[in-house]
Length: 225
Image 1 (cartoon, rainbow, N blue to C red):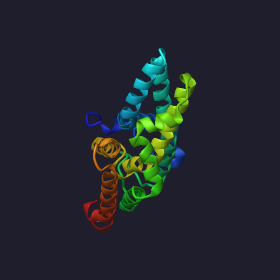
Image 2 (image 1 turned 135 degrees about the vertical axis):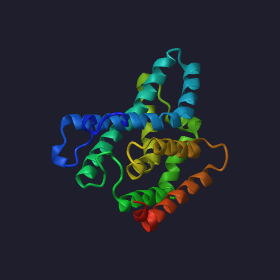
Image 3 (image 1 turned 135 degrees about the horizontal axis):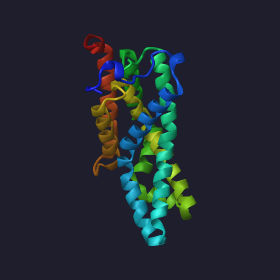
């Protein structure tokens, strides 16, 4: 993007009525790739445990693993549709710049505060427990065959979505194309899922980090902008 002249660079239209099918397709493709890149690494413990179980139970395990992963990604691809529609409206409200950077301190602060508060809710903790215990999830939800693998992948994807959807919205606060933001959020999700010690404490620390960030934006964000 830095090597292209501004006139040759595609940017989402600023007016809702100006969006065409190509604009929606490009924005959706961007979000779908981002969701896969951010969430697939965090699902590796579950995928690895699932693969080992399939190896012992079924000689056709590669097909079952592929079915599981595709179903998991399908959940995030569907969520990407909602993110694309949300971005469309944000451009129309001029909350995002043509370069997809945040233009509203209040919006960014609200996203961080909501994501922070959600870290302390029982619902978040329930979803997170499933992600932290792959063996327990698979023993409870096990289904045989490729269809069963697809079902389990969908179920795990929905659990993962329930756990992390607000963290994904943070991309609207830090800039949709912010690669450091993507890496930072992915690292936080991996920490609270995979850390071998005091995971509950890590989740609450992340919540306090988000809340503090939101409060800082409300107090000093306008000066920075």
